Image (cartoon, rainbow, N blue to C red; front, top):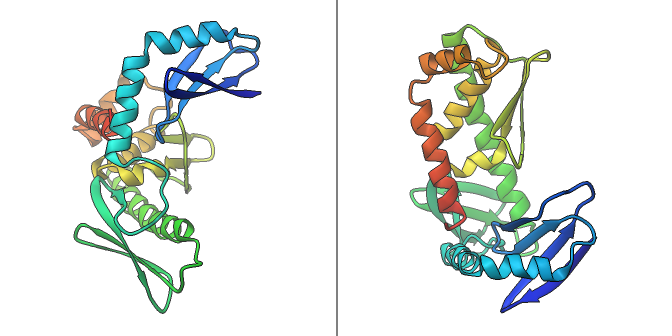
Length: 232
């Protein structure tokens, strides 16, 4: 169940969740203000939470809106991050649908103005991302003397990658296409390390440090870049 309330000049989406015991407040990447709460939580409690944090909420929303991280319409002039680089989208009419990256531009050619621009860009960037994953996988499999049977790509909310030990299958979060390339490289090595040590034990981090010595610096980089993407 969902409900909209207004607090000050903010529009707040409330999502009621079964089995939830606490109230969670979040400013989404598109600047929406969302509260997750147990069923039957009184409005005055939610409004009180919003009022107590209203300055921080407005600051985050303003930063997000200034950064241009809103819902993309895939029009000329929009900013898109690809491997940590902020690119300006340029839409052109052409003989076929294609995407190219040239210097600081993301060039989208479309056959006509009725094409699904988001689908075209996503499809092409996924290919680039997948191939880069394969490149790192091939490199580090040889170095680490391990082998992943399968690589898959998907969007994940809470993880940058996962490894199915039994199936030797690695999943990588497609969101990393926005981050500096070393964040992807680090994630690949991290997941391959699980094939040598299942859990995050001291031995795991010793092995990770052996094969990717800068992993601590990249942990900081990915956190800082996440803040940049959401305008914090």
